[in-house]
Amino acid sequence: MQNLQSKYAELEEKLGGALRETDMIDTDYKDPQHPVYWLEFYGAHCPICGGTHWCMINVTGTKVVCQRQTNNHPFRATGGYMYYLDKNFKVSFDVSKQKPLITHPKAKPEILDMFYRAVMLCYPLCDKHRENLHKRGMTDEMINLRGKRAFGTYYPTKKDKDGNVVDYFSQAKIEPSRDGRPVKIISLWNGMLDNLKTETGNPKFTHDYWFGVPGFYNVEYPYNGKTYQIPKFAPKVFGMLVPFYNEYNQIIGMQSRVDHVRETAEIINSSVLGGKLKVDFNSYTRKYKVLLYSAIGKKEATVIAEGEVPVDQDVVNLDYAGMKYEFKIQKGGKYFWVSSAKQKDGAKSQSPVSVVYNPEIARLDPTKVDSNTGKTTELDQIKAYSKKPKAIWLTEGGLKAIIATDYLPMRFNQQQLDVIGRDFLAVGGVSQYSHFLPMLKKLNVTSVTTAYDMDFQENQQVKDNYRKLLKMLKQHGYKVRFANWDLSKAKGIDDALVKGIEIDFKEI
Image (spheres, rainbow, N blue to C red):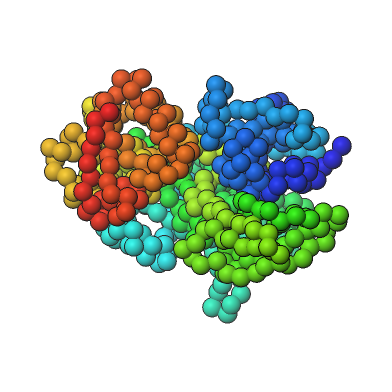
């Protein structure tokens, strides 16, 4: 039997590029102690549609979830369609080689909100990310509207004044034993829970109260022959933290917006004979080298071209000894769910829908307690608003929805907002459109305004999912209107509203 890494290498060789693990468990494998994950195409080519991103394959190379090519077998967990492959792609897999793992179901909203608010206090929005939001059209008043439930910045390390790499924010440390006394474990999160237990007298605030909060997990610290477990918030991807809210203004999930989108280069057309082409591409400098691997020995490669790709260019046409070929720059993801699904005592994000209310409701704090009555009066206001019949906007992207909602009152009067909606629902990706439905029912929505990016006509995956969204909405009796604006002036609804571009509405 082969180990996990060699098995991935075999699949990557067959599919012509890189794969990476998702955090979605393959339910064909029933042992919870040895979870097996679906793999996302990350440069490798989907055998169904040929795409190099978004589609997924199982670890044995027998099943593919294609996001572009439709059939009669929809895969509802992530969107896309299930295909069964022939034996040409099959590889062996030994599940016992998988690392045993203990994870937890996602915590209740009030627990998620408590810890995520604490994270935002520990990792406040940095100046660079604040400036980025300014460029997107947000004022400081808009950024600070939600108080401690607003944005944050997570980096694992930083440089101190002497240039040394140190923790960006210290969550834990071990104090050595002295005079025979025990080692002292200092944990930010355990300390917070101890304080809550003391202040409230509530025994529920145990040291495992954070179980089920995505992004948190137990880190093992070896010291003096022993291993100590300490909880830590440490998402794999770092950058600006974008909150996702539920219908009560509680933070129930977060995404990390990366500072630099990773790009790869893939050969898309070649008439070169006598070997295989590969492009080494540096996404920071945009410099490339084209390597020709001998058909006889794969380790032997010759550099046949090198150069730099202009920022506004995605396809490069070249030739080698009169034989033409071309490669294309493939952009990676910009937003990643804060998750700890593959860590000890971690949890999966589960891709929640974000409820982004208009500024008057968004500013209300669900945790605020009236000092005179002891009641959560602002939470009561939020709950009352959530039950009112309403129109609502639908889009893809949590940050986009936050910006757009802030600008709606500036572009439309109250009578218009009564019709088209003054609040947004946002999913994390276009294939997650089915996640809208439960929240539409919770919020007593009567009509919706859809506002996906205007370039959807040029992207077959987005176009197909948009069509499915509209069909789903009509099947469930919702009145639907389509928001339309000039693509040459703005791609997303947030940009269109910030720039004051005219928006037309079409009833569907």
